[in-house]
Length: 278
Ligand SMILES: C[S@@+](CC[C@H](N)C(=O)[O-])C[C@H]1O[C@@H](n2cnc3c(N)ncnc32)[C@H](O)[C@@H]1O
Image (spheres, rainbow, N blue to C red):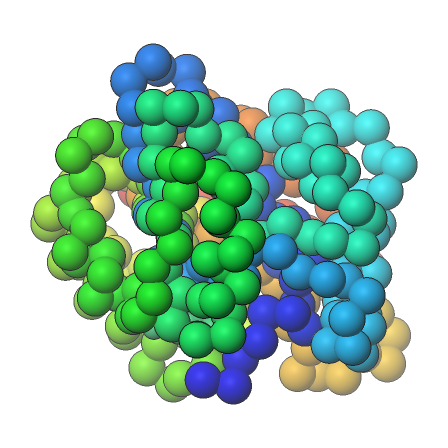
């Protein structure tokens, strides 16, 4: 477990994922009935962009920093920016804080983190929030115990570091188990798009699990001249049971984000139904 999200916080992939997270939570808030959010790989909650790790990678400079001063048209992007700007410019909120700031008093967040130091930071970051619970341990195992949520409505965010070669298969297995327990939940799964094959394998596993509605969102920022080949330049999101009209909302957000985040001429984004197109 060498992964530290501090190197990547606020990069283009975080922006992509967090705008989709906000869009989904805005939908869940439309009904009065309570909902639960389960964040299986929560991270530390808040990231210091002036830290040595963040400064060394410089990734937020090509991510959230490029949105400074932008006046968003898309409601999800506007809400995301409102949340990000409610923090000091050097602090970037991770998924559990973004979620918690969108919960109402009747809603609930369970945020799981395995790394002891990250978990300690997460616990401290969530301590002011009465409806948030930080949990230590393995996100996949905890997810199984937490489903179905008593609310019977909600979102599961699966955002692992993909450090281990078998991570996609762990995601697939955990998803299959979770979907059996909570088939009407919304699932947001992030994945790095470095080669097509692993994404295709995960999509195949989701189909095998029996999902009937699956939306894919991709954001490829392209490559700058002389950029090292190993750099991440494309972010993928798979959304099971996406809320109604999320595809149109994320298309609008993508159109706004692409010119702000692009690094190379081949930059593109896509919103595509993989199953259950209306
Ligand atoms: C990509 S980061 C999460 C970022 C966070 N979701 C966000 O958007 O702000 C992945 C996190 O998963 C943690 N992690 C790694 N393996 C885990 C596991 N099996 N269960 C729970 N957390 C794990 C890492 O320590 C890291 O903090």
